[in-house]
Amino acid sequence: MLREGQERGLPAWECRRLLEHTSGRTRAWLVAHDQEPLPAEQAGRTRQALARLQAGEPLAYVVGEQEFHGLTLQVSPAVLVPRPDTETLVDWALALLPADAEGSALPVLDLGTGSGAVALALKASRPQRQVCASDLSPAALAVAQGNGQRLGLTVDWRQGAWWQPWHGERFELVVSNPPYIAADDPHLAALHHEPRLALTPEGDGLDGVRALAAGAVSHLTPGGWLLLEHGWDQHEAVAALLVAHGLEEVQSRQDLGGRWRCTGGRRPARA
Image (cartoon, rainbow, N blue to C red):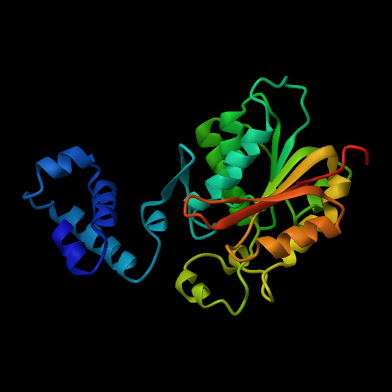
């Protein structure tokens, strides 16, 4: 089956992961028995899954899960597949959250949570913190809530657009990986299996960032931070929006590939 997948033009690592899923065997067992044919039922299931991969469907949707920041998350076409690049956002947030803070510390918030990846990674690393998260999509929120239950991580989940579910509430730290791809970006065509609403707000791709920046000061405590993920070529535009809406100490972070991936700023402590 590994050879058959590679003959379809699929990467060997994807084929191995798929075989683990469809056969229920470990990678070590598959390597030791690589010459043994799969039972007919498993072989048929594997060929169907290989066809889905060949058609461009993400591996995470085919196997139903994705690793992110040390967590195994269940995913479906209702949510984006969590990417390693987004771990940059989590790592920056964790650097701003002291590990020894008391449970009474102010909550942190993840807006547009999708699968719950960022919120759950923060909760897993800072269990004493109250973590809140929301998403416009009820289907996405159901995936996030399911992941929280399976992982035993308690998050305050709410449904709604951006700041709407959090009227009158303030946070020490707000993070978001909003849709940011421009409507005319040619890369969108290759992402057609994932929910378009989570990929692009249409237009120039920055409408979500504008909404987040506009509400930041009224939802952050004095000195609180807003951190945003964005496209590799958007950091200057995002930084300008944060400054225009009253945030200071605006700065950006690069992902492991050396691309500008996140930009953030803080509400003035005197405000």
